[in-house]
Image (cartoon, rainbow, N blue to C red):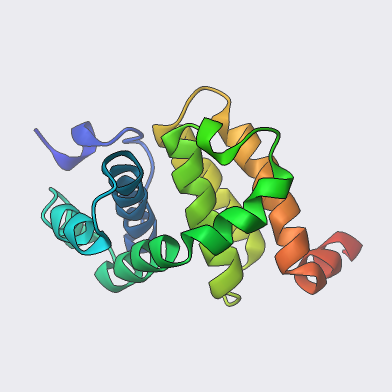
Amino acid sequence: MTDKTTHANPSKNRTPRHRAREFALQGLYQWLLNNEPARTVVTNIRGAHGFDKADGEFFSELLNGAIATSVELREAIAPLIDRGIAELSPIEHGVLLLGAYELKNHPEIPYRVVINEAVELTKSFGGIDGHKYVNGVLDKLASNLRPDEVGADARR
């Protein structure tokens, strides 16, 4: 079995950073469902097939950062969603945590790239229309966290 056949969306040309986001989402999923320590999750994911093609440093920073600041990230997300955090699917929850973490901590990555990556992850791993929900929530969050960047983009 090749790497392409094991991926949810094999037609995509995945960069090392995109792969890092995929593995970080898998780690957050594991963390959300099993409530394991971040260190255990990182160790498990690093042993996964295909991890060597991911940006390992970016993966660790995303996963550890999203877990470490999850309370703060959830507080930023909560007013923007139409249900309680606990009612989100684990995929939507994980993608929103990753997207919120990147929007907050990686201003060098354009907000549209962060949102697009989150939408792609949700399309690959989430429910049928979950990507639309994630897109809407992260778009509002980007306006809150990066008002100058979003405003400048809107004026173009």
